Amino acid sequence: MAGEETEAAKSVISNEEVSALLEKSPGDEVKPYDLAGTQRITRGRLPALETIHETFARSFRVALFNLLQREPQVTFEGVRTQKAGDYLAAVTTPASLDICRLKPLPGNGLFVFDPTLVFLMVDTYFGGPGRNVERASDRGLTPTEVRFVHLVLRQAALDLAQAWTPVANIEVELVKHESNPLFASVAAPTDTVLVNRFNIELPAGGGALDLVMPAMMIEPLREVLTAGIVARSGRDEAWGPTLSTHLRDANVEVRAVLTELEITIGDLKRLKPGDVLPIDAPREVTLFAGDQPLYAGKFGVSRGRNALKILAPLRRSGK
Image (cartoon, rainbow, N blue to C red):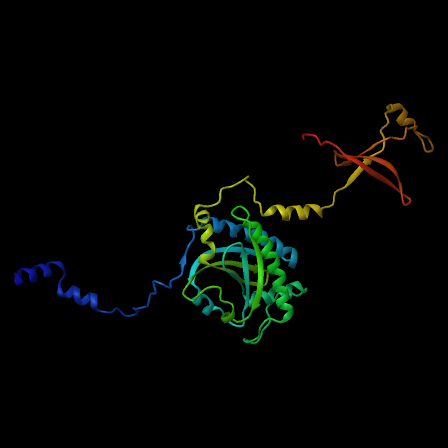
C-alpha cells in the first residue's frame, strides 16, 4: 500500500515541481493582507446613496462658484467602507473635522476637510490667486479659516438635505468643530463607517471633502438605499432652488403699450414736426415681457415719474 501511495503522489507532483514552488523568486515580497480591515469599494451596493451624493456634488459645485466666483470641479469619487479607527488614524493633524447630525437618522456623521483645500479656498474667497502658501506642519486653522469652513458647510448642509429629498426628509445640523481626530470619533474604532469622498478642484489646486457616516446610521434606510431611487418626475430636484434663485435675479425688459392708432400710409408720409395725432386715454394698459402679456395696469404718475399700477395678472397664452 505504501508503495502505491508513493507512486500516486509522484504522479500528481514531482520533487522538482515541489522545489520550484518552494523557491522564492527574486523580487517577490510577501505582504500582509487584513481581511477584516480591508477597504472595500461599495460602488453598486448602495446605488441610491451614490445617486444622492452625485446630486449633491452638482448642486454644491454651483454653491461654491457663487461663493468663490471661480469655476470649481466637484466630483463624487464613491463610497468605501473602512474601520472607524483606521480612518481617523490616517487623518493628518491638525485637521478640520466637523461633527454633524443627519436628523432623524441615528448617530453622528463627520465632515473632514483637507486643510490644504481650506487654505486655497480662503485665499480665493478674499481675492487672492488661490495658491497654497508654505505653512508649518503643526499650524492649525485660524479662527477666520474655521468661520469660513462653517460658511461652506452650512451651504453644504442645505444642498445635502435637498439631495436626500427623494429618499427621506433629513436636516443636517453642525454640532462642533475639532482639529484633533481623537475628539472627533463618531463610531467605535472597530465599527464600520462609510467614507463618501468628494474631490474639489480649483484652478490653482484642490483637495478632498469627506462625509463619514457610521454604517449603523443608514440602517433604517438600507433597503431603500440598496434598491435605488425611483425617478419621480424626470427632473433633478436639487437644481430647483438654484435655478429659482438665479431666475429671480435675472433682468427682464418690460414694456407698456399705452395705445395703438391706425393711419394710412399716405397720412404717415404727410406727417411733419408739430403735427398732433389724437388718441383717447386708455382705461387699462397691458404690461408685456417681449410679446408675452403679463399684467393689466393703470397708467399714472408716481413721485413725478410716469408709472404703471398693477391691477391683475393676465392669463398667459397656452395656459
